[in-house]
Image 1 (cartoon, rainbow, N blue to C red):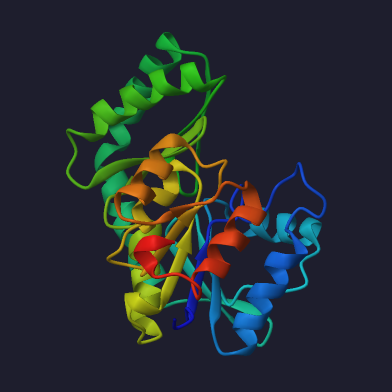
Image 2: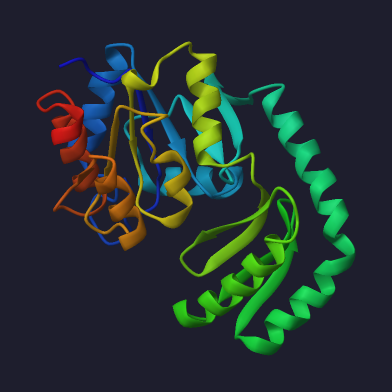
Length: 261
């Protein structure tokens, strides 16, 4: 069974856990390191921004480094001589496309924010990546906010809502973890048959697709929607959580056929 040439993982919950010691299992780090020594590349695809990811990578005290990172589900950076450099023209086009889209809805954001504030308990703010970001006080309140944002987005072409647990924000529908991974695959001139992807939460679903990877997997702690997405395509859901689950799934890549992982 051929080994993957591109290993794509979400970070929080998929390889990293605050509840385990070490937070990223050594067996997983060692396995990725072996793949890298054989020419494979590792991608971390996360919803975090650069400073947040660098901070958590430092705390995790990794023995390995990613070759690529996808930030806020859409920006792509490639490690060159120890520095992460933006992939162009992808990143510039991504920024410009979002700016154009968000300018069209800017005048409606205050009304939507007030509606959300009236109907649920949530922290509401904006940042460099979205004109409206929501953190629900709990999952129930987050779901109310999510439905309101979804309803709004459904009336605006190319506008979508990216959600991870109680957090959500607006984004352009053409930019997500899946399309970012496809861009990396194209840049490296690889084929989906050479790619492994693992994730655990809602914002990972766009990349957990056989059109991007031969092997798709999820750890035991993945949310139900992720598990059903993976299983429906013949992927593998590990009985082990977090990084140990991803480690087990990755080892099965070269001991099982992709649809019997």
